[in-house]
Each structure stands twice: as C-alpha cells, then as structure tokens.
Length: 332
View 1 (cartoon, helix red, strand yellow):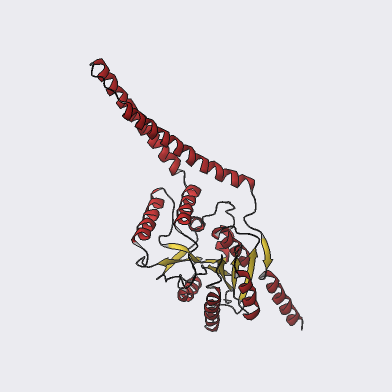
View 2: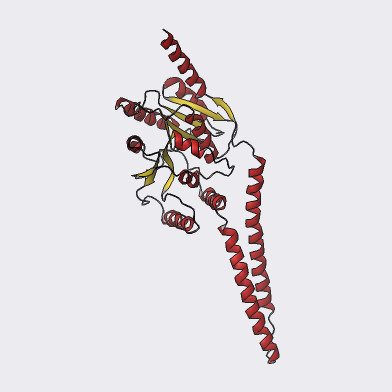
C-alpha cells in the first residue's frame, strides 16, 4: 500500500502572535511522521487566512518560502471559522489521501496526530480528537458545554462529546461530506452524518500558546444556536408546546374566574392581568423570533451564494509546479 499524502488544514484569523510557533511545531511533526514512513513526503500544511486584519497572511507567505511543507490559502474576506475550514478541506482534498483539521492556537495536542495516522492505516475513515477531560475549563464553561451535548442528544442531533474540529478524514469521507452543500455549516454535526467507520483518539487540551481566544461567550452561544437550528426544529416545537400549555392554563384560569363571578366573589385583578399579558406577549415575540431564524436560514440556503472566495492560492500553484517537475523527471 502506498504511503498516504496527508494535508493538515489550519484556519487562521488574526493569529500573528502564534502562527510562527504553530508553523514550526507542525512542520517538525510532519517531518518526523514522514521519517517514520507513515505518510508520503508530498504531505503538507495549508494555513487558511480567513480575512485577517493583522500580519497573518504576511507570515504565511514568508513560511511558504522558508518551509517545503507550508502552503497558504487567502480568502477574500472573513467568512467565519466553519467556512474557512471547509475552504481548506475542499482545496486539500484535490491532492490528498487524508486531511487533518486543527486550530492555529496550539490548544489541541499535535502529538496525537501520529495516532490519527495509525488509526487511518487500521482502516478508519474518520478519527475524532476528543478531550479526555475538561478540568482546565471554568466551572461555567464545563457545565454549559456538557449541558449542550446532552441537549443536542435529547433532540436527536448526534455529536461526539468534547470534540471540536480536530479530526482526520479520508479522501472518500471528505467527498461524501462535500455533498452536503448547505450554507449554514455546522461541521461537528455534519461529519457524523457521513457514516463511515470512525474512532476516537483522546488527549488533554492545553492553554492557548499566545494571543486571545476568537470564541468569546457571545460567539460560543451564537455557534451553539446555529448548530441547534441547523439540525433540528425542536425550538419551534418547544414554543408550540409552551403555547399549548399557556392556552390550557388560560382556560383553567378562565373557568375559575367565571366560577368566582357566579358565586359573587369578584375581585380586582389588574396586576395579574398585566403580568399575564406581558407573559403571553413575550412568548409570542420569542416564537416569532425563532421562526424568523429558520426563515432567515431558508433565505440564505435558497440564494445559493458561494461560501467563500479565494484571493490567493499558494497551495494549488505550488502543487502544479511539483507535478510538472515530476512529469519532466519521468520523461527523462
């Protein structure tokens, strides 16, 4: 069996503080794996610049000149982590046998990547990098994360708990993934839908090497909500259930009020009436908002706009040059 060509895809957004170290560590790791005869010497790393405002792209271009392993992909504007990741995956899949995705902040343990390759040799098409524990997280983050995974499981969305976007996928698994052409990407939910043979590799997550997290609480909540609404209509059903229960409660309250009226025990109830109006009004607005979110997603899907635009491609150009050199050598 031929040694597989591996590409490591690294989405980047304003990562100038950590990028040099990331490039150095991944390049050394790739060299060691090649020396161990686990992968082809044509293997490489693609850094995908997601419209960064700092020196991220300048660093990527410099690293491309210095390292034979480093390639670059510059997107025309910021399109978000998931779209930047899919851009890298689609580019890498053209000339790779397997692809590993990892964030640029070095929090995911790159030392387990050889284990990913070993699992690939064993016949697994998808290898998930899963955190062994969340002891380094705050109590709030740990509690909310575990609650999110439980909730997603309850509404029928199959996720791998404690897994982000650190994974290996074979070429055929990627080809199946690319058939999902939806605009609202939630790769943690899409990848399990592919259905090929998969396994987990466990590791301990590290502290961020440098720079600031690109996922504050606001973005994490938005990402979680996108994941829920992209895969389930449970929120709409929940609002429907609350509306039904409110109607039942109002009928009971109306019957009680009518009974009191017939018995002559009427009393003023301005406060309770106003509270009820506010409560029901709030439910209605929430329901309209949730329905609006789904309609907005439908609007984005039917327009079929491209998920990203590539401004500069230092991967395909270099790869073509390599192929031309190989063709010349073969003719000789």
